[in-house]
Structure formats: structure tokens, C-alpha cells
Image (tube, rainbow, N blue to C red; front, side, top):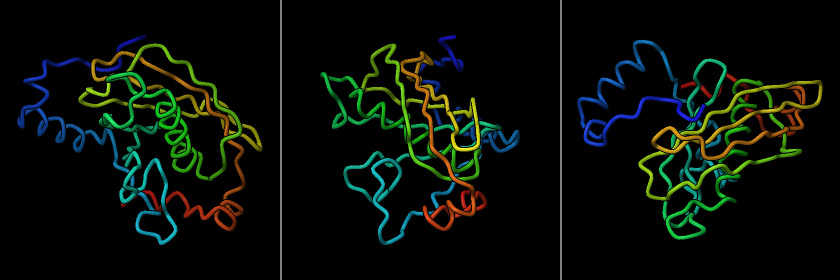
Length: 188
């Protein structure tokens, strides 16, 4: 399963008409719903993954689609390891950040990474138009949620995947101790 979506020629993908039709399809069929970052603008918020004002951060956006969370991101050259190749540590950060948003939105709580196992399957070019990450809960127990995340290049090839185990807390404790704003705060 190396392809996740249809690959369109670049000239079509970059056309206004194609992007507008894709936007309309998303709205009509409610395919993906953009998630709001409830911490954005808070005084002490400086997340490397999702803070839009962090000058060295990844500035990630997230979308909900059914029981999954999706991230679409344009790799930047300053995040490379080898020439034109996205650093493995940045890929790991992308998987970890996506997993946390799955916990917030789908798991309806907060926690911290307890364990993460990443498999690097194919290099990711920093020249990609966009990469897509998908995350989904695959296991839960009273204290842990396991999220499986996958990273695809702009041709739809699976490049890396991870199993991220989060130590989670009851929602009331997450609100009180971890500044979790509650699941409704992620929707505009």
C-alpha cells in the first residue's frame, strides 16, 4: 500500500481550477475539517511543531478526517540532513506532533510521549510540493493510547511510519495539569 491518493500532473495540481474544485469537494463532502490551534497567541506558547509565530518552528496545520488527523506540510531546505533530504529527526518530530494532535482531537485528552518507534522507508526530498501525514489511534488502555502515523511524499509514496505510545490522563486532569482546553476548542 504505497499510494494513498491519485497523482495528478504538476500543471493540473497547480491550476486554480483544480485547487478550487478540490476545495469545493472538501466543503461539500466534509472530507477534511481544519483544526484550530487553541494555544496560538498564548504568552508562553512556543511549540516547535505547531506555533505559527515560532521563527524556527515547523508551523504545522492539522485537519480532522473521520477518525484520523491529517497534516499537510511543505518541507523547507533548512530542515535537511543530506542535501535536499529531510532530516530523520524532523520526520520523527512530525510523527510525534501529529500523534499529539490525534490524542487531543480523537482521544479527547492530553498526555506525553512514552515511546516512539519510527521506520524510515524512503528518503523525503525537501523539494517536495507537499507531504501528507496521517495519524490514527490503533490501541488504547486506561493509561496509554497508541497512534500509528504515516508520512507520504507528494507522489503518494509511503516514506516513513511510526507507532507512538502516549501516556494519557483523564480529561479532567489533562485540563487542570496540562492546559488541555477540551476537544471543542479545536473547532472554529
